[in-house]
Length: 271
Image (cartoon, rainbow, N blue to C red):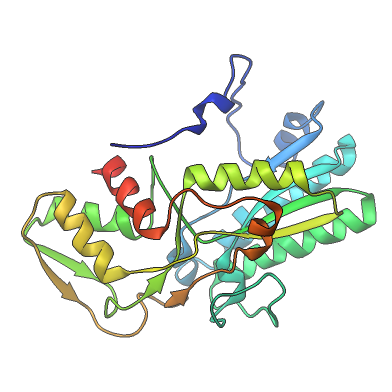
């Protein structure tokens, strides 16, 4: 069973406009006559930054600057931005929003931290208001990258063996897309500071080895797991991550699914 409950957000008046956020003219004309921007777009492939050092600059930092400039020119005052746990780097767990210094170890994390800085500056300089959400690993239907997506693709090509990058002991928090949407809408409704920053995730973690076994089980295979070795999957990979979500919970929000439940639902959606 694949669960996705937020489709009702797209009403009959929903309009889809296809374009590129690196195109300043497109962004400026697209946001005109709106009063709220949900900025969710980015290069989300963390590994790609190690081989293409421009992609996070262009698709994350420059795209965000184009949006902020379009908002400034058009007098739009509110922005929701989806950031990431990778801005913290290799931090003690659970990691709270006030942890510092922030020292990302990937180009992706560095670019997202840069975006947060730009948004904060625009809010204080031009009277805007922002809600910034630092996500754990977001999973669910229509996934196009990430450990679950990669495992399924590998097993479809070779059902007898699953290659796992690293030693499989990498341990992280996962959050189902429904919980992401509910957290954002809840926080926007219940906070009013010029810049509102929230971690968004679950209270637990799950290892890569356990995810591998769950994928093999759901695909009804008898594949062997082969580990490439090492404490991390690739350069820029944070081996262990769990965010503190006490700030959001103090407002009255809590996730419906834990990491294991989120992973199980996501696998069922993708296989």
